[in-house]
Amino acid sequence: MRVADIMNKQVESVRTETPVVDVAGLIFGRSINGVPVVEKSKLVGFITERDILSKFFPTVGEYVEDPFREGNFEEMEKKVDEIFSLRAKHIMSKNPISVKETTPLLRAQSLMFLNKIGRLPVVNENGHLVGILSKSDIFRAVVGQKIPFGADEQFHDWLSRRFDFIIDQKTRLSKEIPDLVNLFKKEKVKRVLDIGSGTGVHSIALAEKGFIVVGIDGSKRMNFVASEKLKKLPASVRKRVQFINSEYKNLDKLLIEKFDAVIFMGSILAHNPDPERVLKEVNKVLSKKAVIVCQIANYDKIIKIDNRFYDFNIRKSSLSGEREQAFLRFFDPSEGGFLTYNVSVFARGKNRWSFKGMHAMPISNLNKDKLEKLFKKINFPHATFYGEEEGYYYDFLFRKPFKPSQSDALVAVAKR
Image (cartoon, rainbow, N blue to C red; front, side, top):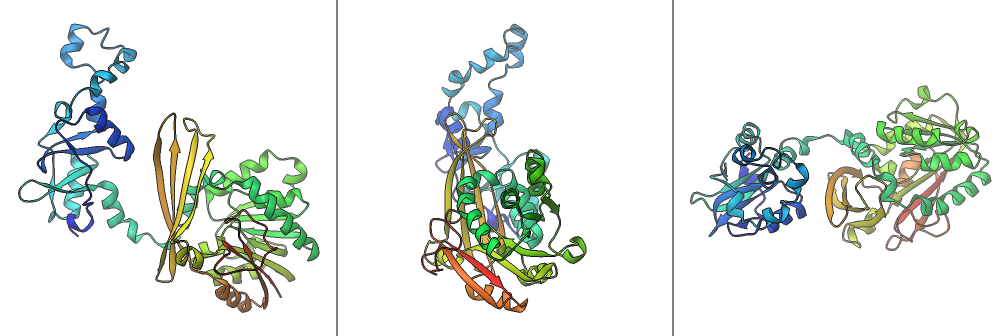
């Protein structure tokens, strides 16, 4: 693989006369660690975060002349206006390391590693800037595309740190729990299995309503967050809930008693590469008159009608140094039978938004017909389908019929 195969051709660059304040704004705003400097499209330098920060510290000469003043860190911070008034040519590294489009990819990676740099300008035979290559570009090309579906656990470990911020859980539960309680009372449900229990919101809410609940999640981090929540609850609730960190297999050996109901909330069934296998495993621990509740996003609507857009939320943040968090979620169309679920996270500090990360995972492309066939395979032939229309997670579960072009979510209730 060559550099040209993965480099970014849309290059952010500055000129030698660009003010440092504009350079800093570009680096911060784009969440990058440096930019190339060009004149008439020719690469003449490179500026990194380190180059800018180094100007806050004294030179050897300044330190020799006045070691006490130049050692004062508060005085250093006051230099910001002075540094921002400089031009790119005053702080850029001249004759930066660069590569050609034909350079082997791992050769470029070696240059980054040996020189401790995160981005490489790509130039043509005339020294003109034609692209930029980052360590993350190489990682995605060499490693990222080969990560197996089992990365589901890593995805949810990453997501767990902000999961309860993405969704307004209070509003969500105010709609979903009453419907679940009414259904379970009607079906005489006492014991509930929560598959993909996440941070434990449904398990705990159902336990507070008197049900005995076991929540299982494959993510250690999600399970940890749920268990920490449980510690803060009254003993009367704690004794009715158990959280287990486990893959969804050999459940008949893991769980001793049978369950009257199982819930798959938040598209968790679609988060598995083999939904049929998961349902068969769950079926081993269900009673003869058990009920299945399965909630998934209406993927057909998301892809065909909503142009792949899922949702965008801004929430107040309780994390240090952050005032708000923003979450953008969207899907890529099916490839090889799987959709790709993408989550981007941003945070706002005092004045500006910054990019905090992005993760993606494959999703089984389930819909009403596929769910119905899966239920029949495990001897649950009676399925009723409902739709949520107030945005995914923000509507009652069982009060509206499913409408393929209108419902944001599909909710199935299956019985034997």
